[in-house]
Length: 292
Length: 315
Image 1 (cartoon, each protein chain N blue to C red):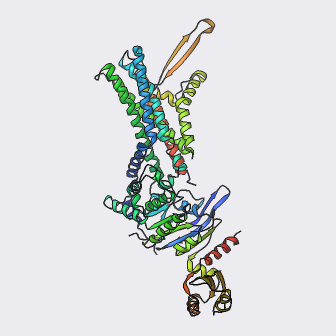
Image 2: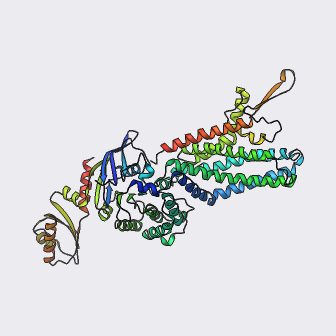
Image 3: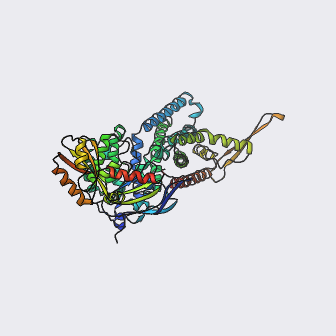
């Protein structure tokens, strides 16, 4: 039976610590994701991407399957970035905005949980749901790899690339959650994340490289290129990237094209910086957001 | 001195130039049902959102069970059940799952959890639909589950924001009946409403708010006594119709009667003086007239008149 006066010390004994609440919230949120139509839809999309890539590799075998590194570099490096962005959009785009738009936030905010608990719990759930999509794509890739090269030639670079992809996923989700916290309408979060990560950052990277003529180290798509570049024998492992200048044409029509490739450690540092900045900004916004 | 269950101090909230709540000072203790009454836009929901840290005060602060909501929302809400703005629950969840989640996050011991969920589902009469997905539920069903979610940890303080708003008449009646049942438990219920009959029907005390300012907070009886002057009103139901001559010549002339209004041939509203003694004498006199008195009930119009006079005074 409830009583009208409560000793605050008793409450501390009953309500779980925030870390426990984070894992509980993440678990329930993940269950919600797994049961949702968007989870089924994204599973089908990832399968479709895998099938298309499998068909392309089967058709154009030549250079792609010349070595196992070339195969994993082009298949994994080319496809996982798209899978990550799609997963972040599907699971993170409305993670915070949806709480306002669908009024589910009024249910959660009536509970004795810190706002940071809600934010982190939802982030972990979105991360795990997205990771499952990444692993599905990886399974298709490895299936192909085993078919072409046998089961004993999985390159160690694949493991490293997977770790970099996980860091990239965290950074993309950090930005997605920030956009989702900025708006109270889910659609803006979806659209902004998709535009920026599918081509916005790539365009910016090209503009900085070609017009400003500096290394585009501040752009996350530049950093994420390390997911594929670790399979290259000329990759730089350090905190500085490599610069390649190729001159084509003759006489007055000679054009020099400069290509920057991020170093592996540099790329990881950039992605972690994105994660920290966007997660802190997003959480800060959510802490101050009013359910008015 | 016992800790106040709900306390607000100079609680103020402005949205731009509009002040939704202006210096609210309110202290509520004990186990009872307090109606937070006011017209739409008076500041009721704003107050409840401030009490649950959904919005932040421009000035002042509030506490639940003596714990500052602004400084320690987690502990302040630990022993409070909250229902604000008819929230939505994730559509793929069932009531059993949603209540399991709430109980889990609130730290209801695993051994008690199943029993508590069963009990609250029975309290809101939703046991039959415990495994139905929310996406398929009506608004009234969802609202009953929202009330169950607010109750699952058996809280000492229950904050309800217009719990029957938006429901059809049957749904409203069901929610009121649930709240009446909840009063039997030893807890404080703080319920906002703009429906007078709901407050009269369910609440022991009433706080009236208009344009962000608290006009008064007292027991229902005291409010009616204070603002009705020396007069009170009762509604009398009769077994058979009576003519206007009986009303004007007999009832209006009874001792203590200040006025009679015939609502229909079988219903009267009688204004009288003399407090409870006067009411007792009036009842005896009405019975002695042999006009077929079936029931005498405190008139809802008393609070309505006070409500309208206090609200219009602020215009």
